Image (tube, rainbow, N blue to C red; front, side, top):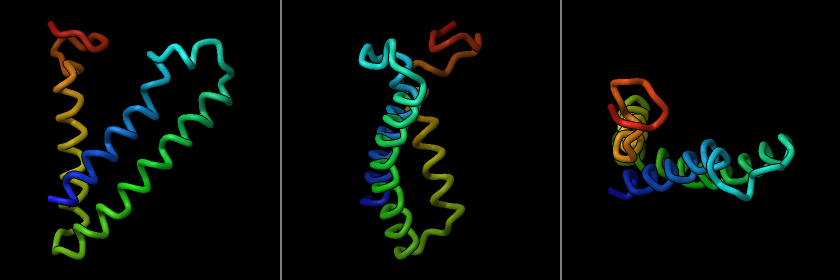
Length: 95
């Protein structure tokens, strides 16, 4: 359970690091280098959660493959729960 929660929290940080800059006003008009550095700064916290999650899960008997699948399921579920999954292929809207 602790592994799952850490992976879930890391996914939130990573989603914010990679896609938050597309919607947040604080990024508007900023240079590309500023946005890149800020995004990587946010992603640092994702790694601070992901590494312990993987180590804890591995110590509890999960394989690397199982941990990766768990992370991908969490990532896919979070995208679909926000309505980003659509059959139409349009940007975050449903068909």
